Image (cartoon, rainbow, N blue to C red):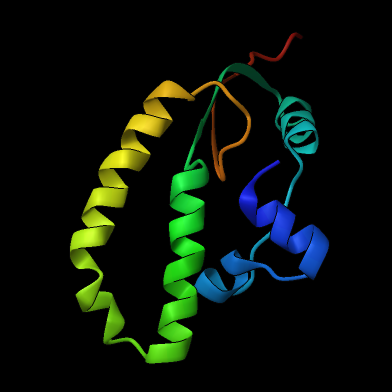
Length: 113
């Protein structure tokens, strides 16, 4: 569960779609199952882009829509500060499944013949 998920569930708004266009969404359970069915063993799962990053990104997107792309230049110092805070948040909550992004480290299992 994350900030973007809240917006999507309650307001049918997907901030990621505005940034990246077509994306595929997987629940963590379904993604892990797909990885296992593809013959991989999951070794580690990590999360990043926790709440600070998500909230700032939503605010920045709102400002860009209202004030235009020029606002990005004005926001550079704030973006740098948010980046540092987000880094520490990621380091502290790396194993907490509330991040926007997930990294799954896995190894291809050998076929048994």
